[in-house]
Image (cartoon, rainbow, N blue to C red):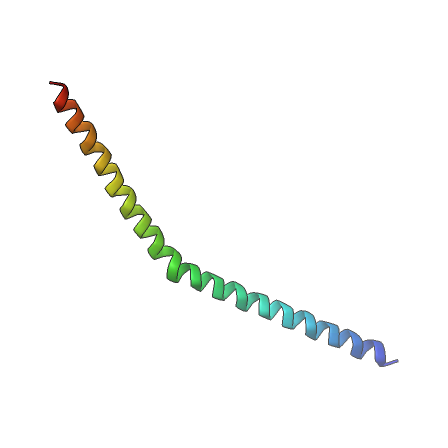
Length: 67
């Protein structure tokens, strides 16, 4: 009569272990995104600003060359 109980307990322990490893994986993924994703996002924004300034300069120079 105790066999199904111990079997269920073993399944519950496996499920707890899986949820624990999923939580750890999620935590490590979030840490990785914060560590590398945020600086990459800032760098991309910086490059975008440089590109916009370059396009603006080309447009201004083009307007002055028309006159």
